[in-house]
Image (cartoon, rainbow, N blue to C red):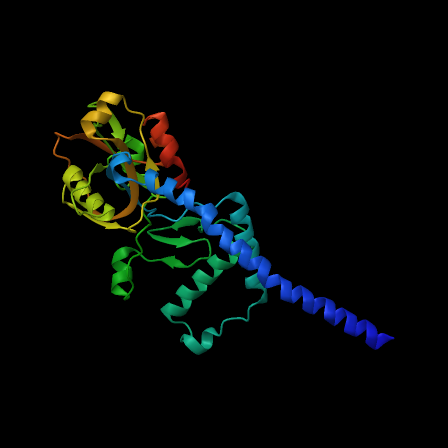
Length: 310
């Protein structure tokens, strides 16, 4: 009985397999006849004579990367201090007698720095308080603090204090300085005329020449508007954003079609902007928040997502 059921199932499946090719062949044969009208329709719509004319521009988003590490938040500082205490509590004592001669200057210097690291990890001020004792100056551990001349005599280099994190340009509001906002990304914005002749704040841009690629036009237009006194690097050959302004019909006719501006990203490595004062009247290195109030709303909507928030 079981063998008969197996034979019946096999016969049923074999009939289905025999009938399957005829259905698939019929559907394939019908496909060209149905697709024929669509092919003729597409050929009529892809006629180059009927295609809309466009004008392409290449714009450069020139970026100055942060030159300072970001100031840690309260949570980051607390987490770092916690990890530092754990490391100091678990690590093996440093064998000073193996590396330093007993009573030497280097041993005393290392002991002072070790006390400083210990207080930084387990509490207390980051810098040691100092008190004066006669003509010489000693710290609160009683170790003599050498002056610059004494340090040079003993073979040590005087330690220079670190530069302040707030630059002078931040205090004076100089937006043309590349040293401002050291923790943030800055972008070059220039003031010049757009296609309608209106003076606006925008990124450096220009038109394409015949046979020219976008990245080639971007570099050429950047040098034409901002001078050749900059060492820049175009990151890639593909654009990262596009902007289509709303132009009146008269402007479109004068341009020769719809205007599309493609943005390419670049970095400044050295130098500074030197505009000629004719096409570009002003420039500024700005953060993302500072760019928004200077540019038009539709322009901002096209570029806001490609600018860094930090």
